Image (cartoon, rainbow, N blue to C red):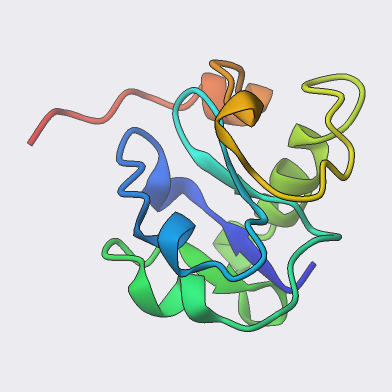
Length: 111
């Protein structure tokens, strides 16, 4: 998985990354966005436009963010959305569901 979205996106979902992604591999969950690991082409454009620094290359993740590759991957699995490899995000692939770790994350105060 070349890039992953981490906790800084929870309750923010700025979505600048959606417009930047040339392969539409970023999908919207209830409280955060998720990168489909098999669709990401490792271009890094999403990372450069994220205003909250929520996106990281998986091989440069700080240790405290080590769980996030699995969070992104598992979001697409049969236990959660069942989307697998949808082949590109579109409005029909938006959900209120989140990975259990994201769903349990403390709510962020409104700015």
